[in-house]
Length: 172
Image (tube, rainbow, N blue to C red; front, side, top):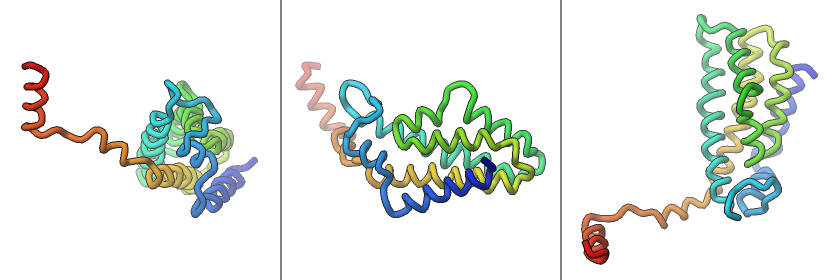
């Protein structure tokens, strides 16, 4: 497979999910557990992992790699090495992210790692990784827009008067 084919696969997945929530995300959001993710028979933590990992990788880590294409002192080889290390060395972040979100995240990561050696310019790197960043961000946006933010109402700040009353009731 060549890098342009990998990019086309990613772009096709973006097109498919632009206006239609990915099935795996819908299942996560509705508590249909197909991977076993979560603990204590709940899936709120799974949804929180989706939020944290997609924002960390899509809007920060890999986006930063793409931005580094504009830095003359950062070589293409350095970008490829950092990308390889992030995708395939040590803790498999994309494997974990696919476990709690969509399987394509890790499939694309493996495909990208397999074709990194083919990239000859930073522009090619930017094209390929830019597509991957868009895909991860799309997953994040779907998740962000459908997350049950109302759960936060259970964790509202307490006023000083409420805290004083709580202390009084507790016998302090």
